[in-house]
Image (cartoon, rainbow over all chains, first blue to last red; front, top):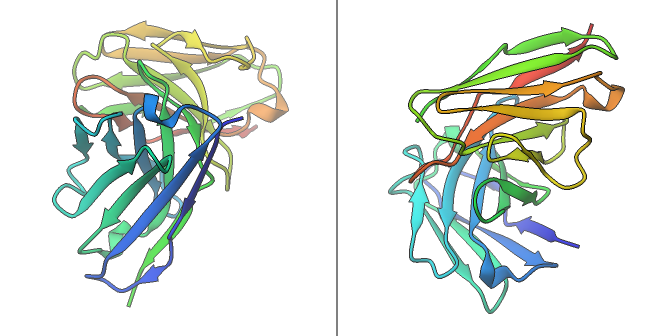
Length: 118
Length: 106
């Protein structure tokens, strides 16, 4: 069974940094691209980043480009999101999601809450 | 690429046929997925390639469309189907969600 478990969410001050982790199990992690998606309180889903198997293609939404960095460690079955220069509007539940391969996100973690506030 | 869903909210009764529309700001061929989300839960993957049902998803769900206009249809709405539905495009170097359609009890 596929499991994705995010961690690292917490309260952080504006301008601060945070690193989220997502531990994967139940599938061959090194064979699938991965994504981060966030959801601000009471709002819709926002895709923010994507990374291919060998990290040779990395994509970001305009809202986080230049501030967030996605990475992965296939040996540890994990994907990460380094978040710098955090703003109030980055407050959200952050989900990692497995790419189906060919389109769509077929498995999601339970999410981790990041709150940016002074 | 911008994705626009309509309506934003839909009131329906159990047994109704429900249709949600998703429009892309430019052609995305068939590169569209649909998700269902319930409050406090992660989204559930329903449909990919505009019309292919993910394994385990009930057959009352169906998707259609190509290019810039897509629809999600639920025939005979069930109590478990009251939720928010999102489309997502995955064409090229971006992935964008629609703003969501909440299906509520009439």
